[in-house]
Image 1 (cartoon, rainbow, N blue to C red):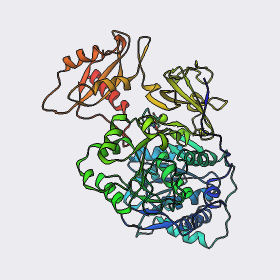
Image 2 (cartoon, rainbow, N blue to C red):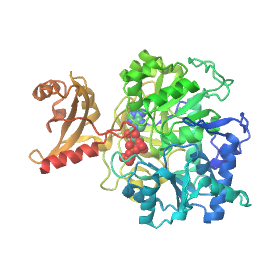
Image 3 (cartoon, rainbow, N blue to C red):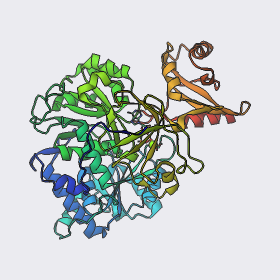
Image 4 (cartoon, rainbow, N blue to C red):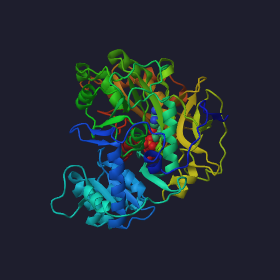
Length: 567
Ligand code: ATP
Ligand code: MG
């Protein structure tokens, strides 16, 4: 059954990102309005600053590097207020931006530079050794490495981004003409939860569409000066003029890139940038700047629910918080509300969808709590029988559609669905059909209110004989056992049974008081159907491997299981 978004369709313009943000005629806030402020130094860029620096940087790229349409600029950096002018300058010059996690090793950065075909790389001086070595392996010369941030290179080997701007200022280049629907603005890399990160090509139109889709989901509740708040939303008003966002998610991931580096230039909301999350600095900044909105991921929600220092700060200005990127339970959201009075709603999306597909609404926050919210405008969705299509002719296979309330794989179609994986037509064909339907690889169901629940990933479903076993469901049971604080379930191959079987990795509350594994097995088996029993056993571990967004890295557990079987 195909379902349309309950929002009316938006009239989405086909326009490049630079024009969309900087040349729009209906902007309400002035050039002098502060948009990005560094959380630690208070250095600030107004809207006008970002535009001016971006144009100068774009001209500098064209004059210094003979920048051509489609050339790729890679940025390996934590979030930094210098990033937006560099990003929008590259787009102005017709380029594509590929953001990279600065925590990557030389090997990982080299892979991304090679895969994306980057021409220049931007990084902090503190990260120069790693980036230089990676550039060396793919033939990028030192003078194509550009430094951002306050610390400059005294040897003169690497240009600072502001000197690229200075060189560009005097030139007379004009912005490149772009085809918004076909030219790639970003080549972002997925998190690599299920394998190597994939290069996801997002067009200008993909991104501008998602910025507008998100504005509707917020019901224009975010306000740059306090005057535009939609009054019928049951949220406290911002107390001091406009909203203020605290940006603590990385700009190198599409979630942070969209909601924290792009959207503020559209909404005009001043955004305080914290390059690396730590709980005390986050609380201090909320208190100091009277932050009203923050975008978070589940590990941060866990801090808000449980960390002792949180209650010593005044966080009462925070009227809205949005979590995404990984599963979050209703219980945890309720704990945070009870403890701090902070409302958290959720969104859901993927790198491949620019990223947001579903978003919670404030007016039904208490009813929909714990769901991923409703489908954004201009999107269609269907739930289909899940099957792993990584081998065989998947694009040709037509999966059976399921009904409301039934659990299956989520397929979506709409303006924010990506163009394909860079240089990987096989992977693209496996998930993107010729008529634009994208298989998300996520398993879930939609309730009668149209809200989405994500329950698992297709690739993570365990196949026990003919049955599908969803690991997240088993994890949900396991954490109910007294003494279990965290857990993860994976499938391991059992030769004698000639099938995959579920195995649990469990973290105990008190490592000095080991769990009675046999008792846990008995308890667990009495709660699940026969095919879901933990036939692969239970292993005690100190912690469950997760990435910084809280995604369980099951591939690491699989490697552990393999090492154990080979030992
Ligand atoms: P890779 O594709 O490289 O294996 P990844 O899918 O984790 O990694 P991202 O694009 O960063 O890379 O993350 C998208 C995924 O995050 C979704 O497919 C989904 O599994 C998960 N996700 C996002 N939001 C939510 C949410 N609200 N609840 C549950 N899962 C979520
Ligand atoms: Mg993915």
